[in-house]
Length: 379
Image (cartoon, rainbow, N blue to C red; front, top):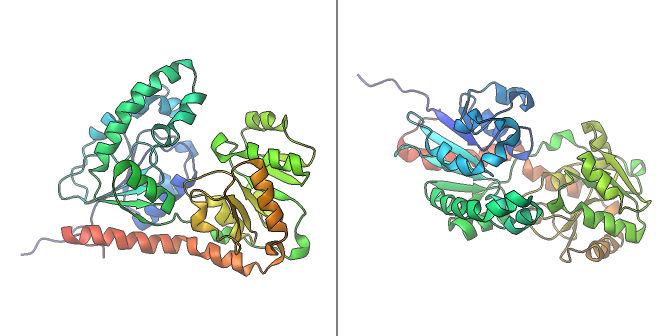
């Protein structure tokens, strides 16, 4: 008598669960694909999670038992590789790791496929190491070279354990190849484009918009400097308050800081700005897609994931000079391009390439290609 088939057991490994940002939105999409999957993470703050993630069984590594781990988890980075390797994954038929911090380094059973969805190789030990080191405190700055050296060795070694890499952009796929010497499929993350919509031309304002966390790598300082020089109007949405206070010191009278806003206010300004200003280099960048879904073009620095989402001269302007002068030259070009007044369908059609349905379909294709040789039954 043939043994009864059982439903495959799936484990989703995520670096840490302390908020709901882009990586966690991808994890939610994976949870909808695998509603019975377990989640493994280093540390979890359940109060910060969405109801969907809370429905899943969430396991934690030994990092969660260290003092003040919810708040100071990043200080325990050197201990995370060993914590991952200590986890017993016996019984799982598929492992999908969500990598931006240490997540892919789990040791899976010999017959268990391991797919890694890479948001980014760890920036603080690779391409942005020197930027992080220069901004670290005295003690951290002294320790970083020793810690980062060991982490790089482990990072490369653990990459060999993954059966198939998926990158969230061509930019990240190139970095996976550069640092880990592995090929990666590209599947863009899902964006909730249905939450955004265009408005009639007469409803739009006479200002540009910068939107996001006011982190140095997103280069809000470049945008603020450019608009102070040009005298054009710029609205800035984002926090934290400490960063707002610092940036206000160098802003001109035409730059308005709105701080952190509710979603309705954010959506209001995305659909009514002349264009989104995007001067940073990001791994993918969800905000440009949200701007396109709102019927507005993007003026972006021609590096990183924005190359996958914005077409120069059609859905925005991409520029190569990262300075304030370079941004102002791009805005000059935008204002003579006609993009501000063109049919919003060009923008919303471009945004339609980044739906969750598309993400799910492409991820299922990868999952089946990796699991069918192992006899997994996904029906």
